[in-house]
Image 1 (cartoon, rainbow, N blue to C red):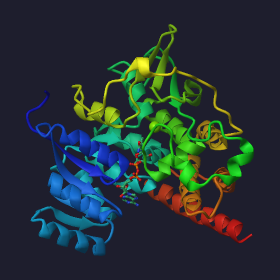
Image 2 (image 1 turned 30 degrees about the vertical axis):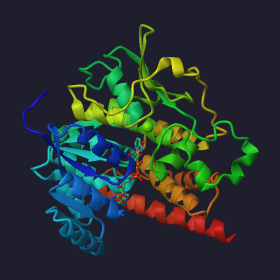
Image 3 (image 1 turned 135 degrees about the vertical axis):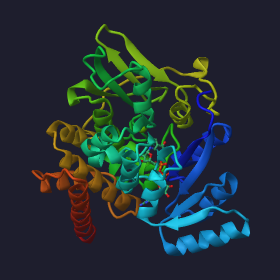
Length: 400
Ligand code: NAD
Ligand code: MG
């Protein structure tokens, strides 16, 4: 085992799917890890349970009223965790000198500021919140470099690629002998649905992912394949990969989590059960391999490994993300993300159809084409403007 003191971890988004999987892995290794802070946005009862179990130094919620509720629950249980609230408190616990590492597992652009705060404080960052890189990839990667933060990819595809790249990978695929990075995608629940039936897709059907248990937003993104689009942009920043060096292949079984093609024709794939505790344990344990709680893969029980090319007619969101990647304009990537967040929320609220998600994003990309934004303030202002244009478009559509 490396080091003598347990790694003190802050989990941003502790009540979510990744947050829970992270705590499951941490709970298996009490000698290695301690919990510094846990944060939640809505599920206060769940956060109280987690504080009672893991005794963090801090718990962070969104509002003063939630903080009052949580304080009462913790006092009743005689837990001494200090309760904070608000966005600045998320940044404070991410950059506190007492925390070594931060699991960035808030969903959406809301995760950007606290993840950036962790980078500025030179922390080890386990990155699940892909939207941070989609909204502000250039700025975030520059901050990681400048402040000597350590960035480890949790997203299963990027973790697979990270495992299949050379250990000393320095950000130059050419030098590493890599021909391309191959992101696998399950194709989601609508891979074989007749296109004529897309208009009738319900939120319940969209969040029922065939292989993975995830939060609602990423489940809808997987169904539209916007998730793979966001992941292309994520891979671009993490591995310094150009659009031409990134491939997407549909692999419905989700056994291979992604691959690296080398110049000599070798292809290295990372495999395992579709359970996020595997990439989480990989990041947390580095350089050691630690128990994740996930069963070994039984090859004889697999029906086969299949692959097919993605279809842009079925999955227009993937095409939009490819276009954004090719445009080489970081502002477009911010527009793509904000419009998608609004559209997905509207679909989950039954205000638009599943097929309208791509239309909302496409309309916003056209409306904001030619925009530039580079500083965090400019990007966040653009994010806000896109959200209001997307919301207005949706309101007009619902009314019409
Ligand atoms: P989730 O919806 O299950 O959990 C989200 C967490 O973020 C919750 O703890 C919630 O309280 C918190 N949160 C939500 N809105 C917030 C806000 N405005 N401010 C502060 N906190 C807020 O989501 P998830 O599935 O765990 O995904 C989290 C992130 O990890 C996403 O970026 C997702 O793309 C990424 N990811 C998830 C998976 C997965 O299997 N779930 C896999 C790869 C990557
Ligand atoms: Mg993924």
